[in-house]
Image 1 (cartoon, rainbow, N blue to C red):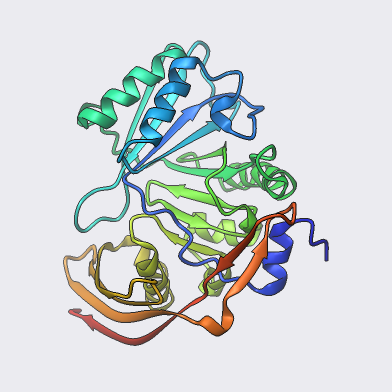
Image 2 (tube, rainbow, N blue to C red):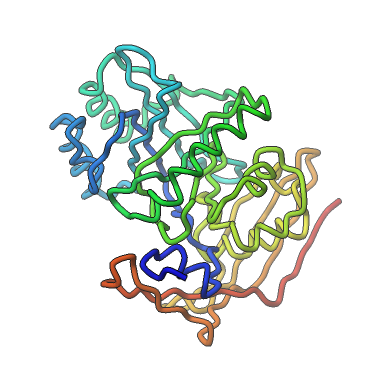
Length: 318
């Protein structure tokens, strides 16, 4: 094993990737050709006004993830694509999507800032059936995303093409955390994060077929939920199978200790046929399994909690 790659160390020690999806109100994806610098918004392609906007929003109370994305196949001449995803309130199956084209990347800052601050997005609401898969290939930020992310990005594009999935777009993306889970991806509009993807697991995710046991090792969580609720949600996937992905869900943290080691969680869900249900359980940290992992340079040691679920009570009004 080559411990110089944090992704290999993570696999070797059996790190569970769950509860590693970021529970955000907005995701903003901006089309920008590679290469990207380690800090993506310091890249030479980024105009000063966009860099300034990124810094201002990052320092504000807005809960936003900014990513640069690119796929040469989708690039339109003299146009820059912007995708904005907004987390809905209440029962939801995924994020609301807004997609627009501007004539130049220098126009992005003013438009995005206006949308985020004024929340004037509804005129651009795009309820298409297009699914967008964002694969981290940000090798200048972390070498695991170069070694594992770039080959998987190419593989993922071929799989989508071979399956004839014209409603799926695969993009390379800048850093969105979890490089030790490389190759890692986020699937929108549902906003589910995945780790350690390969051809078999990716095909299952795209087609929603096959044995779901792989989800125990590849699922980082659902961004629509807070991190402890993501642990319980994975249990529901294993109980209901692929049909769970068609349910609308909302969560409530009933009780939580200050250190986050104990969480009482309730999930409500609504099925496509209109029937509903709920599940309540405790999500706890198993302190005996806490991991201490370093980055690829061996300089930063991170404490990684490992979770488990107990006292699960499921109520299903079938």
